[in-house]
Image 1 (tube, rainbow, N blue to C red):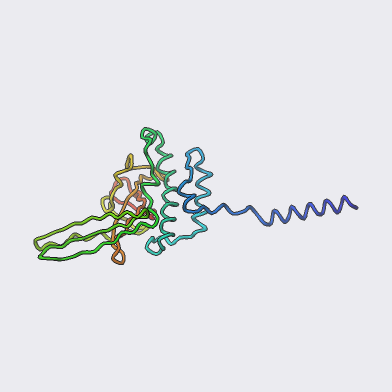
Image 2 (spheres, rainbow, N blue to C red; image 1 turned 180 degrees about the horizontal axis):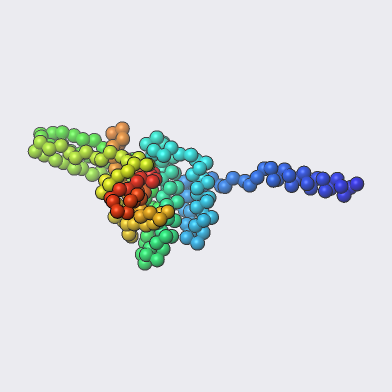
Length: 223
């Protein structure tokens, strides 16, 4: 009788454990994500963890709809995920340059703000941009045009799913090479700058060529 009771108890414990299912993956903090030790040999396991976090976070695909902290976290998370596509698929080329750091190059720094304004004076137009960085430093940039011409407008932002020409979005000069393969398509990273609520925004993303015989590219991701 005691054996039957013991067996029944063990069965109930097993059923309860099975019903509870596996525990959810650890939700990384921004600092933990910044120090995430990416390795090509662990790509499947690490990508699965990061993708599960992305699903649970469920960020809006338009970065302009996120607050500063969520925007920075989403940017670093997506930049780290695309690191595997860019670096592990082209590992031999990247290994020739030990200074390569893709996620640092294509993620938006946390709490970094850039404000821009256009001023007119004596027939000249000046666009001034001031960046307030997390470490307390401030950097600025100005562009002045005189003689009746207006300061060139910054381009409109692109959205995930847009079909564009390749030259409509800028490359990222700091990267070691331009193109990589993603799902058998030729792809590259891009950087865009545009005005949103009178603030200069800097975003990154991925475009892939939809037709190898034409200069037609699709925006597949953005952060």
